[in-house]
Image (cartoon, rainbow, N blue to C red; front, side, top):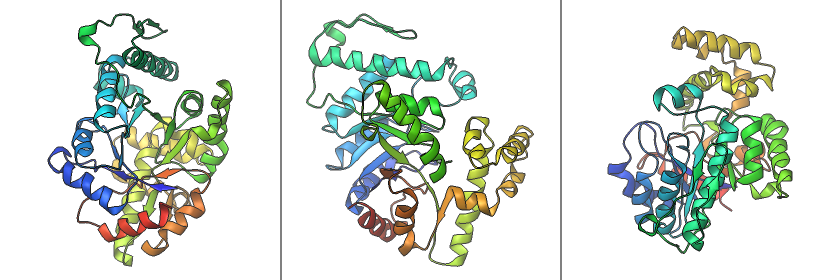
Length: 340
């Protein structure tokens, strides 16, 4: 089990990315992941690659559908070359409202569309690496033109891992069939991983004759920890609020239903639709909190994470922002305990 770090969501990472990436490597993190929320996921990784030597670098996750496969292929190719093979392309579908209304892009048949997208990426990379003719014709994407002027040519690290993110069965199967890794959504549980996601990844792997263990499982568990009761209570309230927000999204309802909390999910969705956000956390019971979050003292957290996720997750990037100068000793000890 490896401990990774997330780039914070709330600020532009570019001004501090060099410092952040160098410290992440020095503290012992195995990888650094960049999200695509208010800021671009790819740009910070150029700085991270320049200022690190060992750290795996990846998007977690970049949105696929607003970009042509050709655009994504070019971004990934350059980052793989510049990082000397340390780049992982993490892709997500997002949900319909954001793809159609925020990005003004197409969302129909997202699992089939993402499958075609991945195959298109690999066809483009094969053309660049091997000099073969580009002639990809899929149900959603067609790439049939590549002239020398636009061809970046071969690189030393052409085998770019693709991880996809998801919650439900379709994307888990796709990961098992085609991908090197799967980012499980933060709203997750050991039961859902064991009874839903792992079996679906195995089903997808069987389609292509793969070993399901070839698909790396990455999770972003909620954790509640702290040096004293006040800090832990503050973290508990923040985690309860975040779980409530995620659980109000109908796409994530199967996770709740796995535990018999479908009705609570419907209530949360109704409150969210009415924009009664402050009322959501009260619907997250202590039992739900204990199911979706790991609570332990800092020196006991590594053991608690292993006890819950051993055999279920290969990599952990906790749902806690990594901010230089905050919790450095905590992160160093947790990385030392998990990365072995």
